[in-house]
Amino acid sequence: TADKVHLRIRNDQIDSGPQAIGRAARALSQVMPASVEVFEIVPVVRGMGVSIVTIRRSDLEGLEHSPGNDATLRSRVRISEAGPAPAGGLRDDSLYPRFSWGVMPALRMSEVMRGDVGLRLEASYELRPGLVLSGSLYQALASNFDDCERCKPSLLPPVRSDLAYYNRESDFGLNRLQLAWYAKPAENLYSRVTFGFLERMHAGVSTELLWKPVDSRLALGAELNYTRQRDRDGFGFGEYDYGIATGHVSAYYDLGGGYLGQVDVGRYLAGDVGATFALDREFANGVRLGAYATFTDASAEEFGEGSFDKGLRITIPMNWLLGQPQRGEFSTTLRAMQRDGGARLEIDGRLYESVRDYHLGILDTQWGRVWR
Image (cartoon, rainbow, N blue to C red):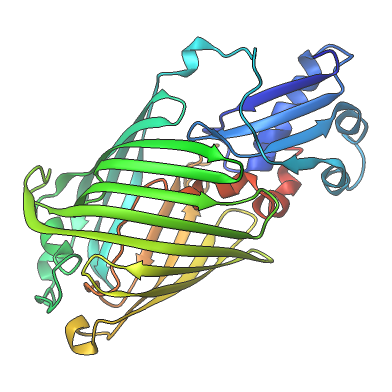
């Protein structure tokens, strides 16, 4: 309009949300007519607008060279719920469909000091906003799975204890091939439906619904899945007979100071029922450290060595390794042994991790990068 511009951005490179928003705002200040005072910037993730960051042009230009300008600008910026795109907006026809791909190092572990390192090729094809076809191929470069002497059968269905056998079967394989649909059915609600090869061991359909207001520390989610176990060969187009319906209700809470708590309650892949408790610490540079423990109705005898599932996890932004803007991450989980009790599907693109980068909490933690 005469005094306001509404810009929707898709950030595929910069790992910091405030940095991407700041660059978009400064670009607008260079190209918008002088009468345009209000910039509404909407980050779009997987086709969904996840927030509106409203910046006044006079604040942006007036604070550019001021001491402490990041904190002052943050106090004047308004962050609110993103609705649908305004009618009559202009969109570049080349935005969709869109193909992207990348290669990154990966580490697969079934227990401490047992696993392999390799390269993961990931690709995605965005057919339209919210509809994404994606896949992942893995090539192992070095492995000691052949030396694994503790890959023992479980008293529970082998939904995870067979992982070493899967990885030993082939150095090259198809980890994931799926079609996902993301949407915002109502205010503060996000939805996901994913179908295909969801992970290395399981294929099927996964559905999810998340309630997450922009300005709330609390988020609530529900997930329901039906899967069948994939064949052990590298591409897994055959299936085992084992199929199961699983599901969880989840609560996420931002404790402040970079700490995030999460509780998941429901049914796991081996049919056991229980809860997972997790605590993560996320630093301003994007590094994330966490620990979790899962307790279910599977007995210690059924579970086997370790009695219950627990572990440590770490996530490192890829820009540390590549030295250039990159939103990719290197993640791994360290556990004493991979058993079947408390095993949950490894879904790519779960909603909470998809939308939280542009909500209060992460935006505030990383706001110091808005002028970079």
